[in-house]
Image (cartoon, rainbow, N blue to C red; front, side, top):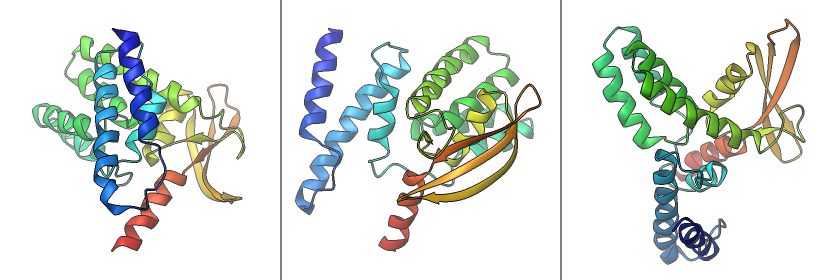
Amino acid sequence: MQHHLRFVFLVLLLICPFVPNARASNNGTKTDSLRAVYNSMAVLSKQLSPLADYAQMRAIYSELPDYRPYGSCVDNVEKARQEGDLVEAKRLLDECLLKEWVNLSVHFQALRVYVSLKDTAQQEYHLKVAQALVGAIQMSGTGRDAETAMDVLYAGEEYDMLLSYGVEFKMQSLKYVGDSSYDVMQGIDENGQPVTYWFRVDKLLGWLRKTMRDK
């Protein structure tokens, strides 16, 4: 059954390549097909299945109109948590997870909410998803320079990657190398040493340019 599911994913990916389609009449079909693949992968992820391909799932999601890299719902969840309204924080978190399942920051926020709720089962669950998302981001590079930069879909993911490395954030700068844009994050590691990580933000800025152009 697992091999059959993977075969179906591969077939769908082959018939829906991630390239702009010049024929507007096909855009809806392409989007529907991509969303079907994404939804199937998200189900596997939510089941903590070893078949879940987080890197591919993130790549697909970034091609969907649902992708919104700015104005994440995470801030509203944290505001409710800080105010002590854990019922509202949980409600907002559930909405956030539906919208941005592939956003690492959402699962880090879920950890904070469930620590406040003292729900260890959910803490462990979202920790596993967060670890898988960290692994998917690490697959894109080590982040040591522009050539090995890590790809992120949301700005908040940069800070959470630093957090996962035990790095205290100090400074951020935007740099351009070739045709790509990078957030260069500087911080202090657990040994008190300065470290620098490069994050490629082409997806975020590409979305922003497209949004501005379409207005």
